[in-house]
Image 1 (cartoon, helix red, strand yellow):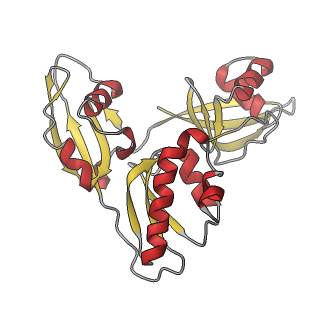
Image 2 (image 1 turned 90 degrees about the horizontal axis):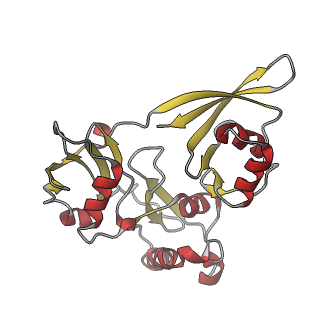
Length: 256
């Protein structure tokens, strides 16, 4: 696959970060050694890398947690036979514990962005009890290492182990649908008519496994991740059976 063929796999709006990725891939092939990227890539990029044979290369992925959307990538050239490389990442927490104000995701992210850091070099953030947990490439950690305030509140930033990052929390939801078609499932998630859910799908605000899915008849299966803009992200956990009217009962897990 050449550069043009590679770029055609992705959306035009992702061209800048994808071109940089291609350059890293070319370098990896030319030196026959792995390359650790500094960026964190969104699902619509790393999902394609996982599913597509690109000149026999392999890609290792890591995010803040297993469920995180943004993932750092290590590129391994074809026929690489060396030791499995380690990710050069720093896991950190920003502790804003106080008695006066609750800090949210936008407070922490906005402060980090104000330091002049590019969004793509920062992974996901999880905020819990006024503490933000994040991950960044080791070469970029110095940019945020001296952070001491979020808004007007004092905070303390420190390195942590990957195991100290809290795992995603879920709320279980049961829905009943005529079939596992995407329009039926989205209709229940959005508490709307099938016509409204079809409109949401056609407008491109529904993703399945982090890829926009515009087919209303797509059949959702166990393990699929369904994201509806402004409504949240859900895992199709399992089919629970049928009710007396022959409708399907499905268990969803909503990220909270």
